[in-house]
Image (cartoon, rainbow, N blue to C red):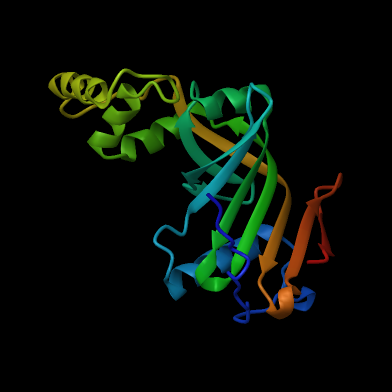
Length: 214
């Protein structure tokens, strides 16, 4: 089977990204873009991002995860530390986050170093989750081979009988803070002459701003 997709083309004409309009700190620009995407609509989960890691098998792998918080320190998401993703980060904390907001013809690509979030912060977020999500974190041996869907459902039913209110956070579940080393903002433009502005963290903890060829 083969299918020719060469006729799939789109002209990007909604916005522009010029150096005279960008702030000194990339987190400020990220916040502006994030809110503009939310206000524009057309994206069901604005905080959905791709997380790319280098696995224990040496292959890169990308999956979609939800961003739960961002600050001037970096970007925070939560996962099972014993998952394929968690084990990959433990071995190589250099990872990539990326957002694609098609409705605004924008991408953000973040290269950074991931570190485990403080336990009290992971506790606080876990407590805010719905009961079903808490139980799901307990039930699922994430990334492990399981015999069937029924296995998960049976295990969940057992836990529902044990926990009706308070659910302890599993020690193998928590947050990662990704401290950015570079953040690239991509704005689609006509004729494939897209705007690409990259911020790179310097040794003095300032941000170097450069334009990249599309």
